Amino acid sequence: MVRLRSSSSPYSTPRLGTVEEYQREFEKLMNWVTDIPETFLIYFYVSGLKLHIQRELLVSRPASLGDAFALARIAEARLEDQTAPTTASKVAAVYELLMEQNEVTRQLKQNLLAAILRMEEKANRTSSEMVTEFPDEFKEGQPMEQPVGVYDSRMVLQNGNYERQVLVQWAGRSPEEVT
Image: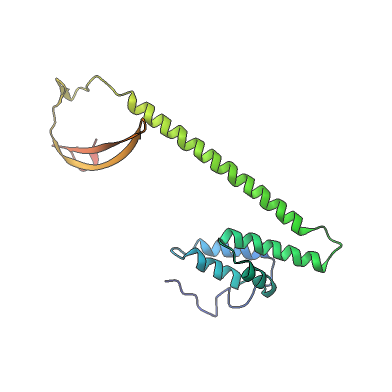
């Protein structure tokens, strides 16, 4: 359970800086806590925003913390556009920034998928090129050492099928020397 003392809580009154500054602070604080549901994080984030931005986010009901961050920036830019119509449109700038962020995220996902496929291909290729000659500690295809037990196991995808691999502890060897 996370508890913040009310005198030191940065969320006891709405923030006075920009949404971007507040988001940076909030993300730093998020790194210090774990096991908090995203709905609570959204609530904590929204409750620390300026009141007019809080109202817009409460109406919008963001589905994720990322949505809340984006909607808060858009709401702030919209307000600035209304109060200073001579300045460049910050809503358009925020929208462009979000589009760039979405493109970078899409590319990262694509690169991660390609990396996963390459790793699976390499694992499958390595496992299919098995050694047919036995090492020196084997005699006539039988191990000279006797297995004591299975230390650990895992399932590995090979040629579209899952196969079980095991780590064996051998007689006369320590648990650190499992193969």
